[in-house]
Amino acid sequence: MTSLYWKSFASACLCVTLSHPAWSAGGIEIPGYAPATGVERSYRVLKATETDMSFWFDKPGASAMTMRGAFRQRMTVLSRDEDGMRVRWSLSADLPEGIAGLADSYQMNLLYRNSLTAYGTAALELETDLNGNPRDLSGVDQIVTHMREMAANGPGGVPAAGESGVYDIIAKLEANPLQIIAALVPEAQLLATGQSYQAETMEIGQASATSRDEDYGGVSVPVTSTWTLESTDATARTATLSLSEEADAAAFSQSQQPAIANLISGFAERAKNLTADQLASVKRASKSRSVKLVVSLNDGSTLEASEIVTVASGGTTLRTYTHIQREDMPASLQLPTVLTAKDLQTPDLHIEPLPSSKVGPGILDELSIPPAPRKASQTVAPDNDGPKAIAPVSLEVKSAKVVSAPTSFGSELDIMLTPESAAKYQDFTQAAVGEITQVLINGKVVIEPRILTPITGGHLVISEPDSKLLQDMAEQLTLPEAKILVRLRP
Image (tube, rainbow, N blue to C red; front, side, top):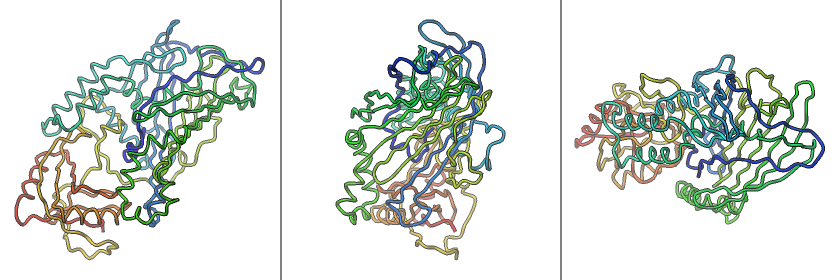
């Protein structure tokens, strides 16, 4: 579950079957994966993402964003033969008992609830190989049918337009159901990383390296993986393994150049002042992965996993954390502070659930709704006396129309600004990155977005489940006296 802001850095969704290297003779034998069938296992899952954009900002707090989630998912191996297994995952967005901190600091759960709603399911049945790696998904037709129905019967009865991109997303998921698995139950792949269909003999402390290629936007990137048996516990009958992965820096940097170019364009004024060394640094990218796995010496199953993935690109850094623990086994791995902190600075996303009578829980980044606006009935005087570090701007409208939202099966008000106002809005958002702002139409607050990057192109988009309310706003903006004011939230 990646955060909404950083999905532009995810160039591909890969479900790669990782094979263990051939270990030397002697040492500890880790048995092949032989799970009991018909037995439901519960897993506690903690996740978090951290971003660092301090390279581009001078303001404290504007560069950092953290999101996290806490889940309790259940898995049952339904059947197993010589070719593979059939596995059922029961999914929930509810917070498990005993989590640290306030529920409001777990925004990934709200996003995940929307994804399960969008798919219309709270359970997945997978076909896996004998390691547990997903290779197929049952019930794809029903999921796709549900998504198409949601697209055709959006909030207010407004169907998603063909050009919105919704149907392209559905077609991609239909063509590659593994993307559905990766979105709803990535835990299956991480657990399978520590499992092997056959017994492996390993020596404590001895490292063994393997390599493979991953595709990022058409660029083949070599990835080196290094496995090490860290320790064993004879009493608990477990072995602790580590996996370290590093993407080839040159190839990965090449794959990220389009995204880096867009980022530099968004910070054009600041980029003009970069030295040659700084610019060269911005154009470099790297990706690494560190995993710890506790594996049962009884049946070869992964009992606990802790993963940290770090991506540095364009002067920014994204770090994701995942910890999975089977609930019937004690935890033994040290957890990063971000997963256990009682108090955590989190983005103000104001996420609201998609309407559904079928299912509660959900997270698919591409289909999650954007921050919810305030209702247009809430009036704020445009000349309030609150302190402003950045001056508000008054904008003129070239056109305003209601369109289907490509990310939520709902509707959006797409406002195109005049060229002069587009430049003013870009300057305002450049100065207000990291701040929570307000957009007012005729003196009424309609949305309070946090500015994450400078907004170029002259488009101002307002999302609202009530399509009639959006249509009313569009009609207001056609009047000669219509005014849009954008300012920092007082």
